[in-house]
Length: 487
Image (cartoon, rainbow, N blue to C red; front, side, top):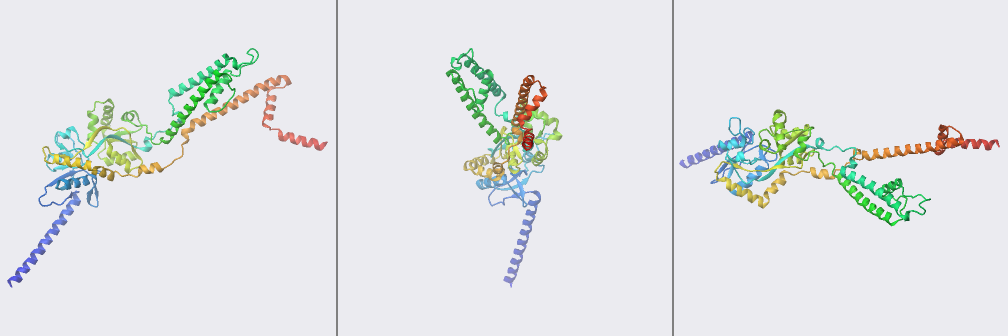
């Protein structure tokens, strides 16, 4: 009987222990979901670190009540290398870390100083101010400060005379001067050379100045024109001009083709100086971020102008979160100044966004620890090993993957009429001038003919116009038909 009681006692104790462990596990899981805490279960003999982070895509994101992202994968790799367990929690105030008005540090840096967390694994920029209060490991990501724009607000409008863009104003001026000078040399050499004359006193030289201008223009358009040079000196000048025009046209066509093919990629805002000079877009950055203090402490005049602009319009241009900044760029005429690597992600996720080419203030994201922490050097060595093995590059490609670049290469759009509007206008003006010149020539001939036939100039002009346009051809044919019938 004692054995039976002993067996029943063991069964009851086992059931109570299983029930208590299941309830404890459920309570821990519920707390992890509600507070945004992820953890790697503690193993016997392994130290447990409390990790603070911040929710930012793609570094740390909440998916299905769990945390994932670049920093979570990095933390898992570091834990596997250094053999530690961890508990991740999201920073309570949603800040990275800056000195508040009362002199205390906010954000993840403040939690480390208050010993609420052991390390911070997040896109936390290494700055001198933060380095004074906490320690940083070797940066695991390199970045800088860039400008995020929306493509339609940043696209460069094509000028009406866009076809003149391949050459600068100085080049066009030099081309016009070379054309006039060459034509004058043709005229002068043709006058001086005996081979261009048969009898200089009786015969007019074909290379008049107007004919020389026409000859140069024809050569510039790769068209054969008259008069044809006879003298060797004139032929030398003509040959040199032909070689010049061939090289010039080749350069123009190549440059114009490149200009049209890259027209959609050119931005009027290439640098921070361009951003300051324009008046179409507002610009700002994250309030209290390292980017804001970079411009505040910079001695560069352009950077000082950017800081003064943002400081005077603090309530309007500074944003609280990165997501708010991206949304504002997409919905309004706003340019966001921030971490270039985060902007690359935004451009990868939203194909209508683009980052300006210039990047300033090279910096890095590091893991923050308490000062004199034994984990600082260990984590730095582990980060270096991950970089040397290519694991950091793998994580970078994994979380920054995009299809926008492939779509932009495959997309084709017809050439906008604004690009060639100046050419069409030039053609229209030339046609109009040609018609006007023809009318003037016909008027001069009609005026001379009117004196011989003793008619008014208007009547002779009308007859000449009708004859050349065959307006009265049907009338003449009907008159001839009726005359034959009467005969």
